[in-house]
Image 1: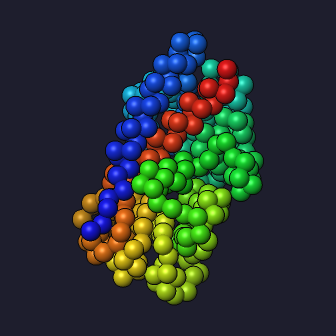
Image 2 (image 1 turned 135 degrees about the vertical axis):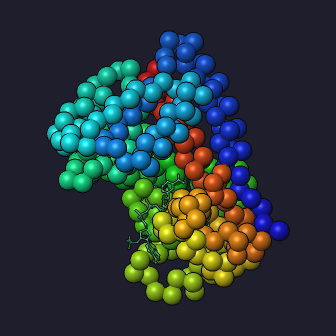
Length: 281
Ligand code: NDP
């Protein structure tokens, strides 16, 4: 029997705790505020932002919309970020990625004040994370660590395989797993014999972005499978990077898609916004 790692349930529990922390801040005259920067009209980004704003409202985090046309120049985006950096009412700054073609994402992310970098993508925050001294961490891997802890899944000495090495998921996941004393293997598009590697893993974290790419035979029966992927299959259904039908009853633990990693990502975004506000006192 596979245990479902229920990210939706845990994220709701976290959001209830966050509501209380927002109340405490409000008693001190502080409303946590998340500034959202959305450039262009990418439909997926609009959906992500809408979900994040809706969740923020529910816990009492104020959002400040900065919606810019796709024609906005890199310098104009950076000027906006500088003004948000200097605004004492703004605690967290989120720049929704991807930015339109031609905009240097690294330059934009580096313009964010590291102490307001709620997504944890600034090189200073990534560097601190690798030194195990991080305060603001990328939300998706952070959410995965919370989910594993909730279900008492031990990582110390365990073999963890990360499939995908993106800046927002796979790469920061390496640091968090090393900090948890796991033995970490990272795989990517150049990796050969992927199945042989994942089959040895106690925990497999999959962030590839290819619908149902890994099937049940990629995992050993005692494996914990974390599926980060959010893809539409040919029928238009939301599916993960792992084929649920061939995996779900075969492994020990697994995240569902939807309802696994996605809600945890949003909960971590709100948690970090509130923590920045708490540090501002
Ligand atoms: P990216 O496209 O940035 O990275 C994909 C990674 O997969 C790359 O490192 C790539 O390797 C690797 N890869 C590609 N093909 C293979 C292969 N055949 N074998 C092994 N590795 C391979 O994706 P993201 O990390 O941004 O996103 C991954 C998925 O997670 C997407 O479906 C996305 O929608 C989802 N996602 C979900 C979130 C959530 O909150 N639930 C948050 C963020 C993402 P290489 O580096 O060599 O190119």
